[in-house]
Length: 208
Ligand code: B1M
Image 1 (cartoon, helix red, strand yellow):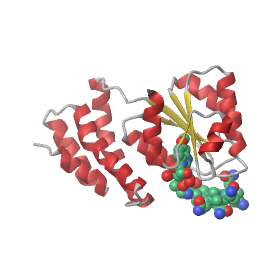
Image 2 (cartoon, rainbow, N blue to C red):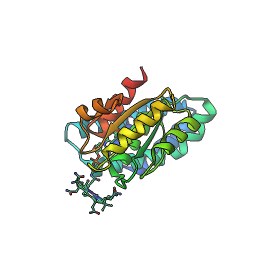
Image 3 (cartoon, helix red, strand yellow):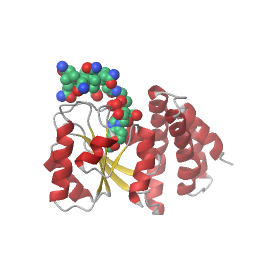
């Protein structure tokens, strides 16, 4: 019988082949896709998140684990859709206007996906009106903004204002190296997180 603990361990190690093999085996054996997701893949990514926060693993390990998760998800995703498994929540994330840095944003996207969120990645250098338009179109509950330059931080404020002006009922979260909780409070963001693992905790809190 497919071993979901071993599946979680394979994600933690970033072992793509084992992750894919166990996912396929579990599906072949008729295991519920939602169980494979929560008890195998997400369980593994949660461990990576905790270790990343504690500085026990670093960005390369997180990227390798996320890649293994992505490979397994490619097999699992159609079955999850068939089974009607609902994502934890829907989020959209982009790097603000004028800013091309995306490594941190991509990590946040991966960790959120790893935690069971459906995530729309809208890329870099995203204008406030594009954030608004895409949030409207996609019906997300959370909009995430990333900025790495002190010169693009004001674009966060403009984007949050544009979201408020449009009357969208979404929660906003911000992050990026120069961003602080004080800045997030000043510009009226609903939440700030310092790293990708904390972004998952924050997103879960914002949903409630
Ligand atoms: Co740029 N760059 N860069 N750069 N770059 C920095 C940010 C800089 C600090 C370097 C320096 O001078 N020491 C500096 C900014 C100074 C400042 O404003 N205070 C800088 C500069 C000046 C520039 C240019 C202006 C350089 C130039 O052209 N003269 C230029 C700007 C281009 C532009 O954006 N318009 C530029 C360009 C680039 C590259 C294209 C070469 C490249 C980006 C490649 C890419 O992203 N695809 C690059 C890089 C790589 C860096 C450094 C070296 C690394 C950034 C990074 O990826 N960190 C950076 C110096 C440094 O940080 N040591 C630097 C790793 C990443 C995982 O961390 O993004 O902080 P981070 O994400 C973390 C958290 O912040 C958080 O979670 C992540 C994971 O834990 N987080 C969120 C991030 N977003 C979040 C969103 C959330 C929640 C948490 O919710 C939504």
